[in-house]
Length: 273
View (cartoon, helix red, strand yellow):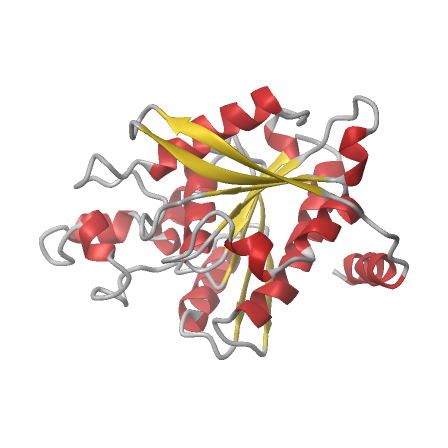
């Protein structure tokens, strides 16, 4: 990561006046039969010529919404400029966990994000519409959602990340509406097992993903992230893992997102698929 940190320091020291633009689009979901808002951040150079850009899908956490990232981290607009990418912030509902809920057919956010939002963005914006140039990440519930969607849809996303993600659901049976989405932990034990990232990586997709996982050491999700890292090491799954002092706060995520986006920028330009 040394070269990545050097490049990021250069970008931050030698800042230019940027003017990224922010759109709010309405993306219709056929699978959930409703219109859903989405923020799209375009780099300043988007309006110049016919350049095409890689895209990063940035997911919010539990009880948040599509515009939380741009409101809480205004610098996200300058990152889009610095790293020359389109950043897409879809809405994942109050507590969807980005599943297609096996219990509630009105919650199909996995299909919505991986198919409907991606199709809309590629049709309406000048993206580079392939997996190599498409990444997904998020915080907390969105960190789980990003890894969940990427592992299940490796043909759509070539890179994925998680910031303070709930990567193992089982230790939290009474939290964050999880029971509403995937059922009682005893009656639907297989859902809790099979829909937790720490178990899903046993069947890591043959199409390799560039992965970055990070969590603050004072976060209540720290232990499950650390155990995920250890398991990926044991399974020889390439990934970047970062832990640093920090809690489950916007202060932590404001810092973390810079490095996540830089990681994706390098993945977009790397050789291979």
